[in-house]
Length: 379
Image (tube, rainbow, N blue to C red; front, side):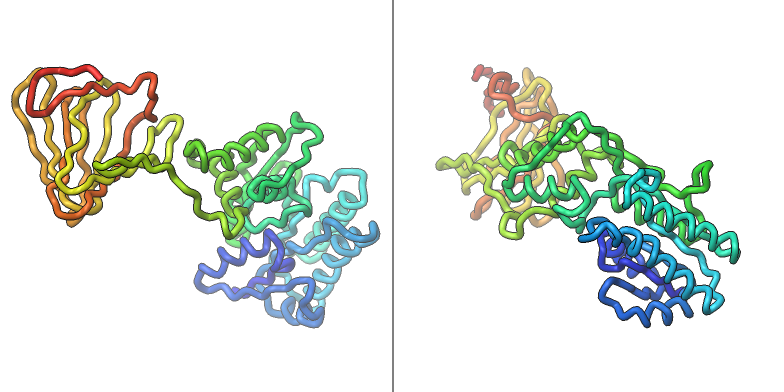
């Protein structure tokens, strides 16, 4: 199938085309503002589906709203009619189509014209009324508050929030693209009024969104990653925020706690999934010799050779595990077991550690005790 995508270089267009390019049997006919208008006629003669994503949001003159949103759509259907092409048309409209302003009126006029075209010709017309769309590749300081806030906060620039209690209705770009592909396949979501919609809509106040974005910025210092439940607004906002990082700030430093034995470095923390750290141990050095009441850990030796020893508190039997970076495996550190890890190789031992809770100096849950001896030492 040949698919015509107008507004191909815009936010929606770029994301949609990136998905369509992955699919076999689809030839994309991209049309954008700089494309010669003669190509529109040629594309309309051969396309099997049209995504009309072209539109005007921030014109220099008010008249350009109607010209860009209604006028272009009219050119599009006229070209299709000239060639007798009754292929389906997906039209990107807005929830502002019922607003009494030039932008809303131009969007509504485009919807009505396309709906009438569908009735007249029998062509399928999918009018989508999008709320605020956010995600990667959205242009800041244009028509998306989320894009502007992400860009400014990531670049340490000020933001302006007029009313933090303003309620936002948001759809994520990946959810939009998924829905648009369903429309291509003939399965759009349609409401009772005949308008198409993206089924996953997130509702949040402007203040809540801004607070989340600042927490993402601060996570590079406090190492607290956001909650990442599948499908959540927080997960989608975090992915969006990262796409606005300055290219010279993709990396950030970590604090290494070093001594003669090696080092210990926390990598990330979470509210409900504990923390991840990396432990470097010099040759011949033994670490640990303690046990925990509730804290449990997972050790993965990624480089070097280690001997991990266990003894259940109050018992004599010692259990040993020989592990190395040559064969990655997870070693669980159960509660109530005194444990130690020793570098028995000739190079530094590098161990990745996951703990089920973040370290709290006030409640370390760490009882010092030698694996080789039963005598308990509090510390």
